[in-house]
Length: 627
Image 1 (cartoon, rainbow, N blue to C red):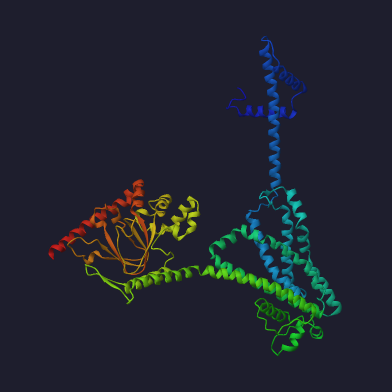
Image 2: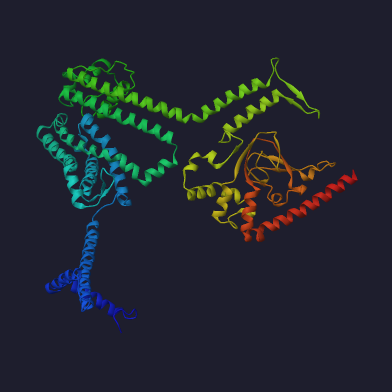
């Protein structure tokens, strides 16, 4: 059996192995020489005698060379693919869910760090690290997170400036070593542990806790390099699924408001720590004697404002009071209040105060501008309501004559008062603002949610079904039991939201111009449903029923032909009402294609409605004959 026979895979495998071995060995020099001579001979004109055999020999040698080249290329591509797979084994991709979670942990650590380190350096002198072992352990643990993060960057793929994802480990490491590696490494050295050891030795030798930190706390300054990692905060927040989901579930204006609140808090904290640190440097220590003996703003405030039971910012053990006093100065500086009870004393304090005031002015202007935009955005709907109320007042003013309210009477004796109309207009606009979302009596999904138009067709279908599925399930033959999501989406995208004021009366065969007949599902409000009055007969009370929220009107009558008198009705709204209107055309189009929905449900609703119509007509005629 031939090796090319599909029933002999072993033979085929042997051929492949032999071809690979021959391709690895390469053609012999004699083969290449013959192939070259054959190709040159083919270019010459040969006599008819023996020309066929020469061409056959040339073709066979060409095939040998071609097979050799093809197999070499294939083998090279296989080796390259294996190398790529091996190299990607250690690459951490940006969209890896674990690295995203790790980035959030690092970011949370950075936010904690941005509060802890300024306080330790500028206010407490880090003395708590010496006497509070759990606090020391927490600081070391926090630093260990940054240590791990520092070396993870050697394996993290990144996007280059041209938008391409860099996956080559050599390029990744070269780029990291030339940019952030040195600052990151310097920031994670064990400064906290070193401070603890040196401070402990100093206190044991001198016995002075207050002065032990006057220069040792400066060791922690290098750890501020960790804040360089904040440069990736925007990227981390943008790529985090947790943060994205949180943002999308919250009002954007509220999130912006909290952003500015957070900015004020963090800047006030840093200004307070810097302001306190200036006084500590001027006093050359934390002891009460040095604060009062040397010129500094803390000593000056204490001399003029200290009272029994009040704040005492002097000494290493009064760090909290010192922080509160510094924070008070920072906030009044940022907000431009300036009570004047805390003032700089030395040249250095005046210089630092000037720098802080300049930064505070810029920051406060930025916050005020941002908050103005946030407040304006939060009040867009209220502003639109006020604008509509002003427009309504102009309309009402035009309805009345110069002498006041206008009253008209038609030939049927019905009256129309401008006072009553004005009252209903104002009530309708107010009800729309309080209860409803839209500003129109007829609106589609696109009107309610403008972003709907920007979605893909598939997302539009899915969104429309999720929005209206609860209302479709009220109508038996439109429920998920009989219709699939595609069919429900087709109907949903033709539905209309209607709003009516209290006291309005509509005819269901044409509630609004251009809509025609359909099913009315009440989202809110209530109305009396009445049959269309037959000529010569009065409406019996038995044919009037109340329709409230969550009830569908016209489920059966919408299936009747237009000529059937029972297909016509009226709705008299008792309160401001919101309805979902499902056009008859959309319903009938789906039922014509979905035989199961028609046979198992809709046709029985149709038959039951016909029987009720016949009985109602019979009862109405009997009551008319009796009268």
